[in-house]
Image 1 (cartoon, rainbow, N blue to C red):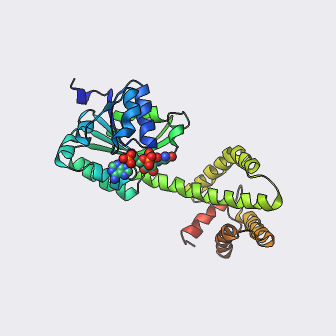
Image 2: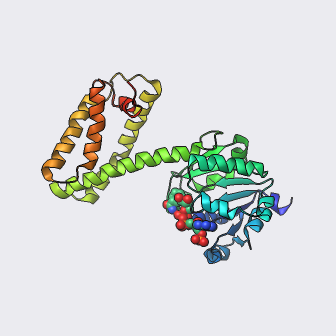
Image 3: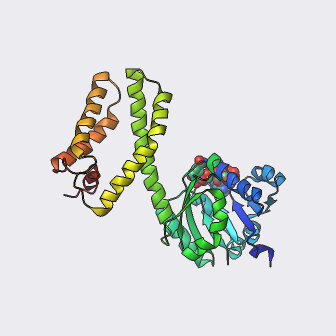
Length: 296
Ligand code: FVH
């Protein structure tokens, strides 16, 4: 078998904090890992650990049937995958893009890769470099199923919870955006909660531990509400919006009285007020999605 067709050969383009973590896991698993980075010195430690340095991008791509990319953004990727030699090397390869990007980035990248004879899988990592390789690490993937199946065995090295979202190449980055929306929404609520503690006298780390302990419960609640949205039956069973209207008003009132930042509770209160005015107060909290859809 030619070197570049050997499935034990994997190439990694991009050795930032995440790229290096990915390459290191592959080396540890006994793969022949060919690496390239814009700043070559970043490969030095990995070379000492057994990775192979590519002199240039084309050489890195030629060295393996699977090419993993993990750089700052898709613009950087496009800058890397430039030039006749690089493009020619792509024919017959499978590219797995683990750089964060938009759904449009993914769609354009798949078209470009396929036009140049390469299979394309788009991925989104929901973990930090230190969490790579652990059983709970979630990585989202989308793209042609047979291409995904052909490289899944290697990708499993990066995390225990690989989630394939289907053949639409933009699905992974779209889901990544949705997870970011939830993450930042929860984080903003957390920071407001820290301010409550700073005024009412509990420590941020004590609050943080409670949130950590609470996470499985909130996860179960979100999953339940997602099922309600999916079914479209908003009859109140677990948590009627009316209860939350009172709770959010209390959040805003307490913030105003204690003189802390009111932006988060004010935004939350505006959403619940819209639900109340639309007549959803006795429906399940999932009915808030109708406010976000501006739907009656
Ligand atoms: N780090 C994390 O926690 C998150 C977790 C979720 C997924 N992200 C995404 O992973 C991509 C890489 O992130 P990173 O943390 O490895 O980022 P850096 O350590 O800053 O490394 C950036 C690499 O990109 C290379 N690079 C940047 N611009 C260019 C360019 N124009 N041409 C070629 N390469 C470029 C950079 O090269 P160098 O500066 O070392 O020469 C690094 O290899 C990212 O999409 C995260 O959102 C990580």
